[in-house]
Structures are given as C-alpha cells and as structure tokens.
Image (cartoon, rainbow, N blue to C red; front, top):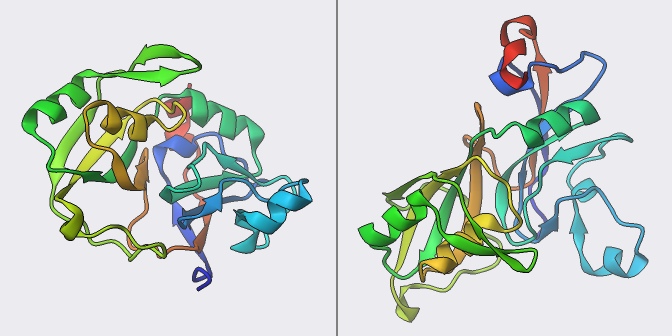
Length: 220
C-alpha cells in the first residue's frame, strides 16, 4: 500500500527557523518506514529497489533534507532549499525527540544509563554519547506501521521517549542496543519547536514564516 500523500500550507514562528528567507521554501513531512532520506538516486539499480522522498511529493530542484532518518525509521523530517539554514540547524545542537519501541521491558537502571550516556560504535571507535532526556512512556497514539512489528507473543516490549542534541549515525538504535534493548520501531516526533503532531505517514506540510526578526538569535 502506498503512503498517504498530502500537501498543506501552515504558518509558523518556531525559533529554529530564524534565518529563513522568503525566497526559499521549507517543508516538514512524516517519513514513512522504508523510505530513504533523499529525493532520488543516480543509481538505476537503487531506484528499482528503494523508495525515495520524491515519491511522496514533487519537490522542486534544490530541495534537501535537514538531517536524516535511516530507512527503517519514521517520523518528522524537515526539508528546505536553503543550504545555509540546513547547515546551521545540523550544527546547532537542537533537541530531537524520538519515541522508541524496545525489545524487552526496560528498567530504571537502563533508563538512567541512557540518560547519563553510553558507549556506542562510531567510525570504528567507541564513542560516549552526551547526557540526554529519557523517560518511560505508555504506548503512544501513532499510525500503524506498514511493515508488521513482532507482537507480545515473542516477548515483552516497552516504549521510551528519548531527546538528544546530537545526530550520530543510527545513534538512538545503537544506544538502546548498548543497554540490552534493541529498538523495534523508531519515530522522530520533534525537532526543536517543530512537532510531528497528528501527521500521517507520507503527509507533507509546506511551512511559511511570519516572524523572522523575533527568532533570529536562536541559531547564532
């Protein structure tokens, strides 16, 4: 089944968009499971095997994702034609919040370890993640994933909310695996002051700014 496709305009004055120019276009989208965080590919073999963002919406030339979600992750992805803005946000240490479904019943001890920082593999070396906010949560109200997730018959699961300011490759998945709870489903629900809210997989919202001056200092 193809992802639902929507395009809606909305107005925002979120702090992370201080330097947006009216000549640029900016979107947020709900990246579905199984999509690559890029518009397309020059590799014809990859085009036949993978799914890309231009299947969700006819983005104009020069559009780029701000950060990425891996193929198996879902949720909030920001898009812009402003390369300077993209670079500023990626380097700014802005909070990114995720909901993660974990294999097993996570303990307070494991949550504490995640919060303080754990060692993960990065570029062939060990890396200690920065302190972050981690809390146990009830099952969130999210759209069903297209690919089925194993059920409770195969053992208990648990949900956490984790908010990080880094963006290392597959960081959240590596972190939960480091404390013995591999991630079964991962959804990004917030970047700074921008929320996924009640968006559906494949939905695209065009963002327009009305308050650049008041929020300009955030990215400096």
